[in-house]
Length: 296
Image 1: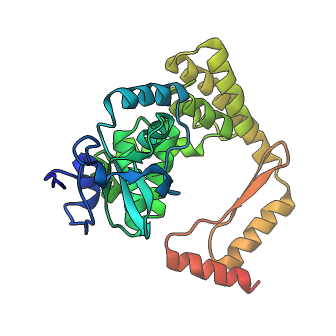
Image 2 (image 1 turned 180 degrees about the vertical axis):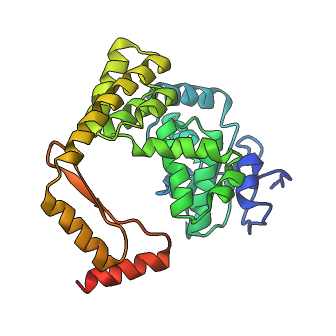
Image 3 (image 1 turned 30 degrees about the vertical axis):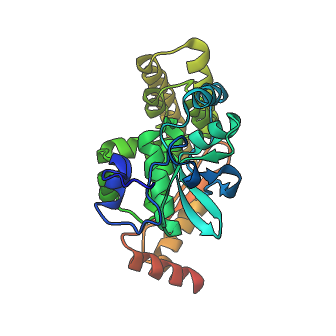
């Protein structure tokens, strides 16, 4: 017999949906012992491609699988119907994987109807708030909610229950070098370390500092001092580079600024690499710059 649960969304999904109602096909906590006829076959469920979690700790999964064999699955997964007899996982992939490891052929579930965008939102927010995601996975989830779900920072803050400063600190992690992101993901360095090295623009130098942090077991304060030294040294190098920018580049920058009717900045590193920066204040201004570039 199906049993309605009044507080079925929980804090994470309730926050996400802002109190909005979702059409529900079957919204029950299915108990394998009392109602086996409403269980869903595990092989009829496919993984949600929007799932933000990338890494699953094998030992943790094995421990959960043992618990499921002994006591059953206490918290159902959440799925949505996609075709006749087939379902897509919305949240609970860790429980789903552990249940398969435990040898279950059927699994208790909440079944909800949701379009793809809502499915993405539900998966991201559910996992950010309920699963032990690493800092990089959380950052990626926040970014996807902002970009793919087109949320503002304020809307995101309200939905995940985090202040905007916390969200910004997570998002900044995505500006780190690949090596630094892996170190944060694997918890070899903390977010405090990450915030300290994020001011280093050179990826190679960032990676070098990460290795020093790990090998020297540096504290956040020691890392900040190290970064400060590198920044001072790097600043002196940049000053020299700016002085050595050729007259040709200066003239090119000036000429391009005139043609685009906006300031164009050219910077160059000792390695020979560099960048051309064209700032704009609005989408309308950007479109005008693009139009002028096309007419050059």
